[in-house]
Length: 259
Image (cartoon, rainbow, N blue to C red; front, top):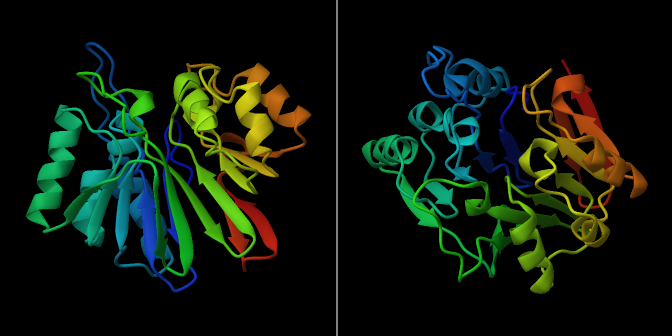
């Protein structure tokens, strides 16, 4: 879902269950005035409503940075998930706000860590990170991210959160990274992520970058784009294409974009 400089992914499973991974959000730095836009309520929710959705089954938080977690409290309140899946969650105001909303709605909080593998919605889900020995910092970091691989038939989707080079390396050491059809590129295409070794192992056919138009971070990084191109990945960017939709029946893949 195009949420500007942030992440939000809707997964609709073959049996109709729905999972929302992240809800976008707008960081405020230093003495900046916080935006009055609630990306969850004002961007993601209208998209779901427009598709006739009044509930989701799972909300998953990759990590507690504002551009991922900021819209989730409103989305939990609006769409009443059964469970909230998380990676590593050090204490922070944003995490407390989401956790409190989940508690008000009776949503079960389910921390996940690698290695884990379970069936869901007629697919297979693997948890690749955080790894069991990962120790979070006192404040949220990109490497806290929940990394999921979803398999359906012969196709797979790798949702990488914002993991950076150290976690990519650890996942490679654990032999967790395998060729994937669709890669949600980590950290908006930042140079902190998407190393050559990682991309060689993942070898994605499609690489989706969730990123804001003319953002101040320089995302996506030119070297990352070049590496993806060298691996013959078709690159799809929300700042250039808007909403990116991938569909599969477990064998064939189709991709479409829409502003």
